[in-house]
Length: 74
Length: 134
Image 1 (tube, rainbow over the protein chains, first blue to last red):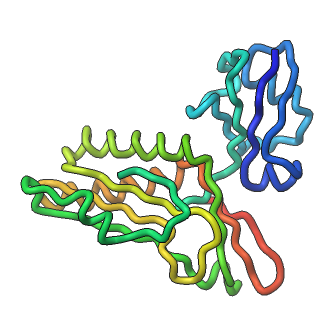
Image 2: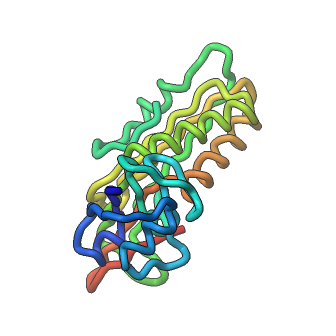
């Protein structure tokens, strides 16, 4: 299945882009993250669509996976 | 009102948004851009956000304030884009019947926003820049 992935903040800067698409047979957030082949620090959280989700959460075709590096609002 | 915006933040708007006849207290928090960090002179800051998710987190914060402190209304506005020293980056206003609840809920709102809202801060110095979290 195809999953759209959003990168933010320092991750987007490092990757040189903020959006990509990946074709994967994985079914969890962790599967998709592993398939990206990016170096992901353990401090990075994940979101499916607009909710935080653990690595074990199920992800489906059409979902948007976001990689959320440590936040700094305020 | 709960929003992430590139517009200049208005304290009057925040105050007006939470004033209610059954509330005797309004607590207001304003986060502003500071000119130093860890001994370095900061020249400007840029904020970026995952707007839709951040606004959803703001809504969760407001709901929690209502549940725990019976707040009258909660306003959370965070600015994104390039900000100059002294600019307001975040404005939170909370109303409640009495002051203790307004203070506590306002404190909860800013602390939770800082942990949960998907917003990123990039600080610029005379030489170089850095992503700042926490």
